[in-house]
Image (tube, rainbow, N blue to C red; front, side, top):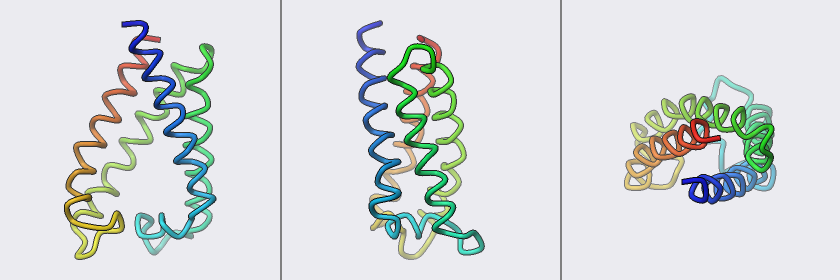
Amino acid sequence: MEFLILILKIVFGVFFCYAGFMHFKKPKFFNGFIPNFLPKLIVNYIFGVIEFILGFGLFFHQTTKNAALGIFILMTLFLPIHIWDLLKEKPAIGSKKLAIIRIPLQFLLMYVSYLIYTNS
C-alpha cells in the first residue's frame, strides 16, 4: 500500500501542479467555470495558485497530509461548479458527455485525496 500511495502522491502532485500552471497559461479556458458575478481573471489566478501549491505540497512528507486535505476540500468546493456546468446548455468543459464524465471523476479525485490523507 505504501508504494501505491507514493505513486498516487506523485501523479496527483504532477496533475495539480500542471492544472495550476494551466490557469495562467490558458486563463480563458476556465472562464466558463467561473460565475459571471465574480472577477474571472482574479478568481482564476487564485485557484491556479492554490492548485499548484497543493500539488507541490504532495511532494514533501511534511506537507502531504495538509495538501491532500486541501485537495479534498478544493474538489468538494468545485463539485457544485461542475454540476452547474453540466446543467448549462453548452458546458464550459466542451460537451454534455464530458460534463457528465466530470462528475464521477470529481468523486474519484476526492477519494484519492482521502486515501493519500489517511495513509500519510
